[in-house]
Amino acid sequence: MTTHTLELKNLTKKIKSKTIVDDLSFSVREGEIFGLLGPNGAGKTTTIRMIVGLISITDGDVFINGTNVRGNYEKAMEQVGAIVENPQLYDFMSGYKNLMQYARIMPGVTKERIDEVIKLVDLEYAIHDKVKTYSLGMRQRLGVAQALLHKPNVLILDEPTNGLDPQGIYDLRNYLRLLANNGTSVIVSSHMLAEMQMMCDRVAIIQHGKLVRIDEITNQEDEADVKVHFQIEGDVHEAKKVLSDMNPELDVTESGNELIVQVADLKSIAGLNKQLVLAGVLVVGIQRKTKTLEERFLEMTKKGGDLNEVAVPVNE
Amino acid sequence: MKWLSLLTNEWIKIFSRIRTWIFIALPILIIIGVAVYDKVATDTEVNENWKQDITRTLEDDKKALEDAKKNNENEIYIDMLESNIKQNEYAIENDISPYEKTTWKFMKEMAPISSLIGLFVIVVASDIVSSEFSKGTIKMLLIRPYSRWKILLSKFLATLGFAFVMWLVVIATTWLVGGLAYGFGGIDQTYLVVTDTQEVRERTVVEYVFANIGVEFIELTALVALSFMISTLFMSNSVAIGVAMFTMFAGNTIVMLLATKDWIIYTLFANMDLSTLIDGQNQLIEDLTLPFSISMLAIYTAVMLAITFTVFQKRDVKA
Image 1 (cartoon, each protein chain N blue to C red):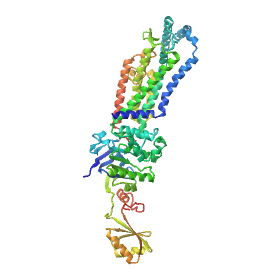
Image 2: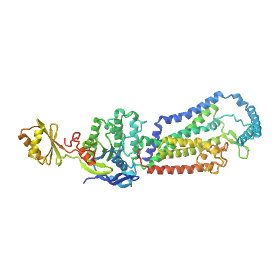
Image 3: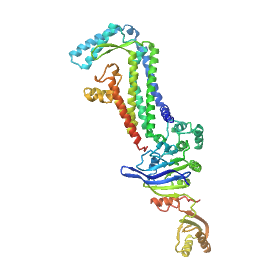
Image 4: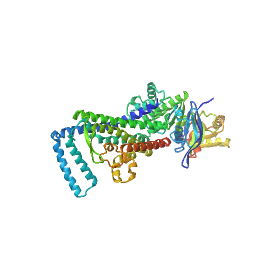
C-alpha cells in the first residue's frame, strides 16, 4: 500500500472574483519526486503558499502526513521543509547564523546535523561569511540546507534550480533522488520542462490554476506515439518515396538527412528498415524518440506545436 | 520550551546589526559628553556664590514681569515668570541651591534623553516586522511549526526587551557618569516645584528620578505597540517610523494648538509625555493626571496590539 504524505483535496484560491487555483486535487506518495509543471502564472507558487500556510485557503483542504493544515498547522508543519520562490535569508548574518536561526526553532536539530547539511550543500568554505556576499547559487544552496535541517519527510522546493550552475543542478538532482529513496516526498515546481523530466517521478501539469493531467515519467517503451528517425545517406526524397509507396497509410516526413516516421508499435520499425534496405537505401542510423514531456506540455497548454528539435528524449 | 527559541532568534537578529550598537553607544557618548562639558565649562565660583546669582535672576524676572503685565503679554509667560520668582525666593529663604549637583540631579537633568531612546526604539520596532516582509525573510519564518501569533509575540517581546535594556543601560550609565563627575551622594537632595495653587513645595530629586524611570517603561511600551501596529498594517518601516516619530515629537505641538478642546485628553499624543506629569511642571493640559494618562496609554496599547495580532494572523503573505 502506498502512503501519501501530501494530499490536496479540491484546493481553491480566489482573490476577489479571480480564481487563481481551481479545485486542485492530487496526492504525493512517500519517497517520490513530484513535479508541479506549468507556465508562469499557472498557480504553482500560489498552490505551494497554500500548502505551507503563507496564504489562506479559500476552499478545500491540504493534508500533510494525515494532518489538516487548516486544522492543526503546527503539527502539520513539523515534518515540512520548504523554499518558497527565492530563498530569502538574513543578509546581515553569516550563513551559519542563518542556519542556527532555523535549527533553534525546529525539533531535534543537532550540531552534527547542521555540519552534515552544510557539507551536503557544499558551503563549508563560505558558511561563516555574511550572506550578503553570497552569489545566487550559494543562497539557493543555503536555502536548500535550511529546508533539510530537520529531516522533513515532505520537502517542497519552488523553482529549486534557479541560479544553480549545471554542476549544482546535477548535485541537487542526485541529492533529491537520495532523499526520495530514503522515503522523503519531494515536491518541486518549475516551468523548465527538461529539468522536471530528469528530476521527477511524476509531474502534474497545471494551467490556469487547474490540473491538466498527471504524467508518470517512466521508461516509455510501450508508448503509442513513437517517432522513429531514419538517418539516410544519399537521396532522402527517394527514400521517402520508397516508404510512402509501400505503406500508403504511413505518416512520413523529411527533415534534413532524416526521415521521421510515426509508428504504432515498435515491431514495425524493423519492418520499415528492411523495406529501405531492400530498396537499396543506405540507412546509417535509426533513432527512436517518444513524444517528450515538453511536447505534451506544449500541446496541452496550446502554446506551440512540435518542438522536437529542442526536446529532450525521455528514454535516452 | 521551544517557543522561547523564537524569542532568542529575534534577540540575536536585533543585536546582529551594527545599527543596534550605535543606538546604544550614542546616548552613552552624549551622557559622557554632557558631564565632561559641564565639568570643564561650569564656573565653580558662581556655584559657591549661588545666592548672588539667583538674586540677580530674581531682579531680572521681576522687571520682566512688570513689563509683561504692562504690555498685556501672554498669560503663560506671566505665569512662568511668577512661578520662577516664587521658586527663587523660596530657594534663597530656605538655602536650597538649584546649582548643587549630585548624580541624582544629573539624572534628573538628563531625563530628556529618553526621547532619543524612544526614537531608536521606534526604528527597531518599526523594522522588526516590516523588514522581514520587504526582504522576504518572513516566508522562511512563517513556514515553521508555530502559529503566527507566537511569531509576532516573540517579535513584540524581543523589541520590548531591547527597549527596556537600552533604557536601563542609559540609566545606569547616567548614574555612574554623574557619580564620577559630581559624587554619588545627595539622596535626600530636594528641588522646588510650584503647585497649581501657586505654592512652592520641596520634592526630593530621587523621587523624581525613579518616577521618571518607571513612566518611561510605560511610554516605551506604548511606543513599541504603536510602531508595531503601523509596521504590520503597512508593511513599510518608513511609514511606521514616520507616524511614530510624528506622534512622539509633533504630538506636543498639536496638543498645544488644540489644548482648549475637551477631547484632546483622550488622544494618544496628549498622553505620550508622562514625565511632565510627575511633578506637574510645564504641563500643557491641566486636566491630565498621571493615573489618567497611564490608563489611557494602557487602553491604547491593548487596542493597538489587538489590531496588530488580528491583521497579522489573517494576512496573505506574498512577499
